[in-house]
Length: 425
Image (tube, rainbow, N blue to C red):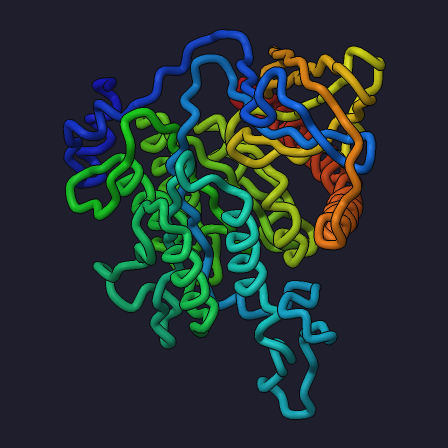
């Protein structure tokens, strides 16, 4: 624990506990480790097609295999607006419509297609692919009550962030909390720093926390927002310099506690000039992901990685054939599952993983493959897998566009820094 961290906690009114100090993960440089959990070496695999199922986990160096993850969702008033997709699957897409009566426009013709609904469904979809033994999940929401006369905070000491569910391995509790959030009416300003500070308390096991973070886990905040920080300083519809600085200060606290923050900016308001959120992710070593159409977060969130593993590749060394990209599904926690091509008889399989820092690792096993007809249920499951992977492939182009956007933001930030230095001279 650093002296700077204690000083930062004191400034925020936090006191560290022994549990926090003991829970900090070691961040050591070591080769990427790949473990194939199924099948076991020497196993006999039977299938009608020349494909063998496999699953396992990849981790970067000595990073822990366990994760404590808290979703931090923006529930401010602007999240009632349409997300751009049919979130609830009723065949219609919510939209904003002008009214003949001034000031009473219909903000969203289908509230269940709102940005908030997209945030909730994205989180619900993501936890379906996680392993509760490895990944404990919590939920926090943030906004900020507004005084209708001044557009400032209604009270100087009001709470602008709420713990909806403490860290747990019981995903049903998280899912229930998410559904409860979806039923509420979005309102208020955007107090991003309040959400981050509360998540730091829970992930750190600080005084007042209801969560019990694990000693061997990596701590991650997944923050979804459709706006810029507008509280606690100034008016609810204005991004004040103090709002930005307090948000970045909260991120510095997270960094001091080895907590990584990934931010997802939903819609033009959040991503056109995201000063605060890009600094938050840069400070904590996280990733900022712009999502131009907010509803796309439903599909995109499940494709991210908080395990610092960017890709997993499987190859059959016996026949020299690679598994197609769509045949290996990488989960956010570094676990993977999929299929690799095989032939009857003995096959040697190598699985390799690429970490975010460019390091690689691999492992190999031998298996024996024999043909076997699929039952109707197995065939339907196989067809479902193929359909799902095709849908995931459609997101690759969107992710490429996001990476191009992130590169533009990095270049723009560098330009701003250089211009600032020139003015000082």
